[in-house]
Length: 590
Image (tube, rainbow, N blue to C red; front, top):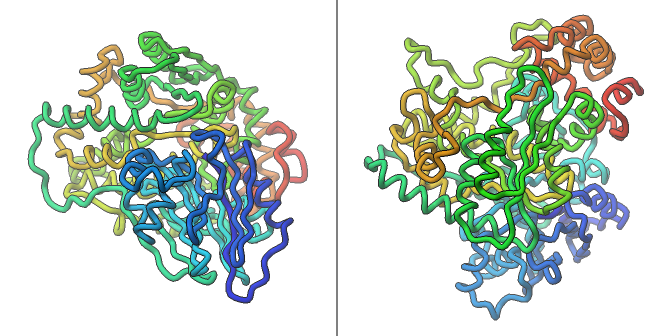
C-alpha cells in the first residue's frame, strides 16, 4: 500500500521544478512512510511513497520494463498465478505490483482485465508519451487527476494536488450541496473545482498530456435475465469456496495483519474464515465501544467470538473528550469529504492497530453485495405496500437551517440510477446503485483515509471479483427472506460459526455523536455558527438551536454534518493546520 502521484506533460511544455514534486511527495508521505522515490522522465514525472507489505527488500517503485514505468497503490492477489502464466524468469522483483507491468507488455491498455485485487495504477510508456491511469472495479483504492496548461497531474489524494499548487482550493458548490444532503459526493467531479476522480474500474488513456480514451471494467458480472434457481445447499457450497478463496488471497503479506471486529455479520464472517486457515501466529482483532448512555454495544459479542478463535483481542473505549481532542485531525484526513460519523471509530481503531500490524482486514461490501440494508427491501416494495425511493430525503430537509432550500442535490444519484450496472431484479438494481456510489465514495473512502492516516493498509475480502460473482448470481430468495437481508451469508455463518448468532437482531454500529454534541451544544453551536463557511450557507441562530437539540433523531446527523464541514473547510479550503482540539480549532480565525 502506497501513495502515488505524477505529471504527464504536453509536447513542448516545460517540466515543473523539483520543489513541486517535493511538495507532492510530502503530502503523500503518510501513505508511504517507508520510502520516497522519483522518476524524472523526458515527458513525465512519477512519485511513489512506499508502505512495504510484500517483498520488503526488493519491491521499491517505480518498476520498469522495456519502455514502461509503473507506480501503484494496491495489492494484486493473483500475482502468483500471473507469474506462473507469464514465466518467473520475466520478473525482476518479488513485488506483486510487477505483475500489472508484465501483463501490460502482453495485453496493452486492457491489462487490468487480468488483475484480481485493489489498485490505483499509473503506467507510463515513454515511447508513446502515453499514460494509463487505472483504478480497481470497486474503487477500493483512490485516484484523482487535474488538468493544467502544461498537461495532467494525478495523485492518490486531492490534497496532494492542492498542496503542490497544481489546482486551486476552490469549492464546487454543487458537490457541497450534495455533501450536506447525503454526507458524500457522487460521480466524477469532486468538491474541488478542477479535480476529478478516476472512476471505479476505469482506465484513462492520456497521450501527449491530453485524455484520449476511457475504458471501464465493471465490478459486477452482466446478469440480464432471471437466474436459474439454485438450491440453498448448492449456493452455500459455492459461497463457502468463494469466501475461503478470497480470505486466503487477502491474507497474503510479508508483515503482520489483523481484523477490525464489530460483532456484526460481515466481520464475523471474515473471522470465521480466518479461523479455518492455517497460521503461525494468533490473530489480532480490535473492537470499538462508545462511552455514552444507550450507545449500541456489540463489544461483548465481538470479544466472545475472538476468544473462541483464540485471537489476541482488544476493546477500545471511545469517549467524548477523546473525540473532541482529535476530531480536527480526523476531519482533515478526509480531503475528499465523507461526513460519515463512522470515520471516528475507524480512525481511532487504525491508530491503535498500527502499533502492532501493517495490514487490516475489514468487512466493507457485505451489505451491498448480499443485500443487507433495510432500504433495499423498502425501496423494492410497491408504493401501496410502503415502498419508498432510496435517498429520497436530504439531511437538511424540513429543518429550516440552510439559507436556501437545497436544489438538484440528487442529480448525481439520479444519473447513477440510470447508468449503474443492474441485475435482472429490482433488488439487484438497488444494490448496484449503492455499489456504484455509496460504497466507493463513502465506505471505502472512509476506510482508505482513516487507515492511511496511520500508515495502515486496509483490505476488503468481501469485495473480491469471484465472491462478487457468486453473490450477484443469487436469486432474490437467497438474498432476502422475510425481514432478513443477507440471507445466504447468515446461513453460511450459522453453519460454520453458530456462536455468532447471525439471525439475532442487529444492534448496529451507531456512533453517539448526537448525544455528545448536545452535551456541548451551547458552546459548539456558537463556534460553528461563527465560521465564515457556515454563515455562507446557514442561518446562525438556527445553527445554534440545531446543536442544542442534537440528541434528537433528525437534528443530530445534521449538526454533525455542519461540524464536520466547518472543520474540513478550515483544512482543505483555507489550508489551516488541524493542530488543536475542536474547541480551540473553531475559536481560531473563524
